Length: 232
Image (cartoon, rainbow, N blue to C red; front, side, top):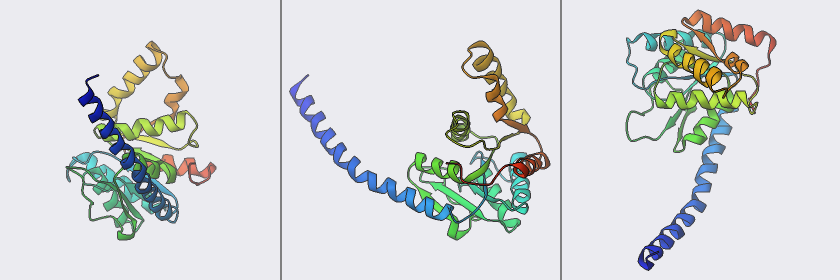
């Protein structure tokens, strides 16, 4: 290796190691703040979906209706705290006088706190992985509205945690047959049947609904026989 390149790499990595050591404290601080706030809130449902979904879109309206009805059942609502589906879900929680939580993430675009988050329940994160721990630890259910890469990341993260039993069995609902059916067909036909990368019972982790009434009834029935508790 060229000596100048080697010296440059060694200098860069020395700076990286020093930065990483201090970064640990920032990560710890995010965990501590999140644990302290969310542990006080009580049973919650996390609602995921696109930040790009506008008011008047059918999925915005559906997220609003679902969150309102869940809050009326006594669940707090946790979202990513931004616009779109997240805004609709927080708005529904407030409309029903439920707890409205936002787990915001610092991004160069799209993300900004919506106005429907309870001021005392507005959390801010720099790290996606810390934020996802907050969603998964304190949610008693997950509602996946249509979304993009971020929603898919959260979808497969939650599915993996439940599948591998790193999380207790927790209701996981996909909303919108028109949106999700293509992905579910691929999971069934390719991932499961063709390649045998998952088992048939893994598909039982997912419920697919179109209406707010179906979603709320599913959670209501599930928690007639299952305890409400943190997931891990």
